[in-house]
Length: 392
Image (cartoon, rainbow, N blue to C red; front, side, top):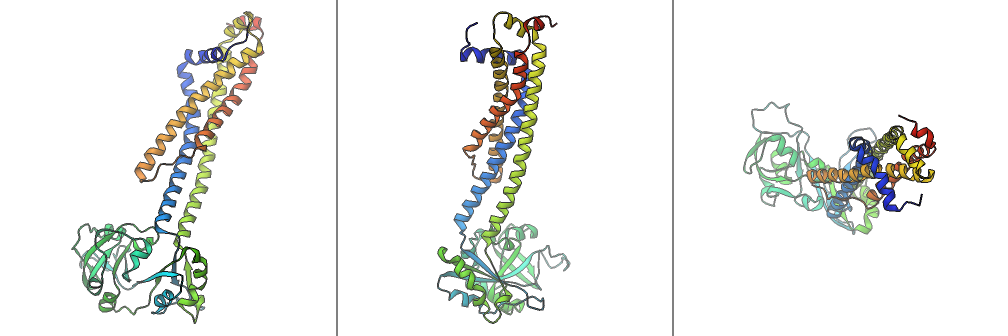
């Protein structure tokens, strides 16, 4: 028998799939699930990283926060009232603004709610430039200004507004014995998530209505990009020169990066599970091919008796296994892309699929198909024509 062309090899290899379409579909499904799992995990992880990069590009990585630590006796330390002003004197610092948590103040929907049911909402005194420094945006209404900061006006974080059931501006909330008017609602603040569950009032209003003593609890500091580490090294000593060890300095973007590192670890685990699913799919393909050989002994014997060589029989069944795996691989690519598309649409993320993901999926598919079809192909080629023809 003459050598088979590539077209004939594909046609002969696909004959077994056409005669048993349901079995072929179920076998390819195992490959498809494994490929879809791997592609979707990689794509979702890449989309999340792209969203983080976009967020950091918009908000910047040059934000530092200063907060009081603990004294040598284990008690809560306190920042000086003039700490923010001293930090602003550092040459590379482009801006600094303070907030102060008021632990004895609570906010309620109305004055009939029991004091213990505060809903976990913090009351925070704030300087006017805080939103500019942390990248906070007002969803509805307006931010505090020089006038409203002196009177009972409040801006609610996104979570605080939800817990209080406040959706309309002009509504009043009961804040430590005083009625405050809601003038603004904030969007979520990625670099200062503590403000999401806070009710923010002006620095002068806190002193006037809540007996605030003027000591900040957080100072947000923006620096020149090239001087972040240098400023970070001197912030504690600048904020509290007498006891710099009682000051904590951190960078919020580091928290976001750490969260992304955790996501990468989870991605590795999910990729491992996808690989297991892919191997299971390969075992299914091998099982299907072995059963196919047992059912098609007469066909193999007839082809051998007509002059087909062992090599051509091996190529036929190896091609059939590769076509079966390829079918599953293509289905898995489309399924994985669909999962990524739906997830990114729901989460409002940019859809990103690394080029190497589909390429890697194709290589994995061919590798699994080759390994799954190699033994059945060799077994089929070793059948003697007389033995194969004698099979029922």
